[in-house]
Image (cartoon, rainbow, N blue to C red; front, side):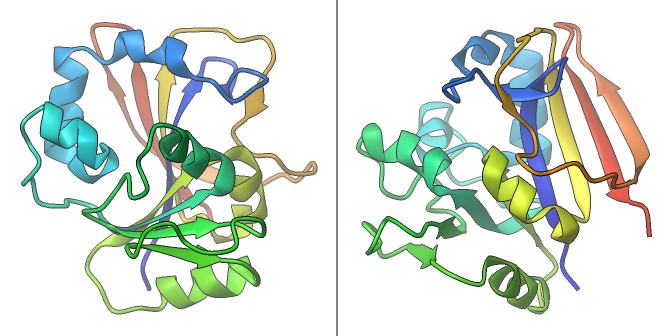
Length: 194
């Protein structure tokens, strides 16, 4: 059974974006040390455009071969003219409103999101599935999330888009590791407690 990993950036107070979903203020913490971490351990989580600009476009996927994102997260790329932001992965977008996919590499999940994710998890592969975001999608898939990798940036938002847009529900995870970077970023890895 493959893992569904919510690999996500957030503020100290648990927001993945401001009230409009913008998280661009976090980009100032993506320095050389942090980029090296991404390039070596999670290269597939950098967009195809970013990989080309940083000259590691041919890096092998280390952890994931599939990405799932919500319509809001996907729209950021569409607004910038990018129809397949993670072309080095199989891309799925959960959307009831998009209609048709704007790119042959992007498959739409229009209904039975949980069933679709369970089918992906049941596939035979050594690599997992990256839940890219956003908040509402993560909330809908909380019961399917096997692992959290949370990149916490040293900022407080006070208000914004929470990591999980869901009703109150206590879900326990076990802390597996913490990595600290010189710029104040923490990367915490958790596994679902069974």
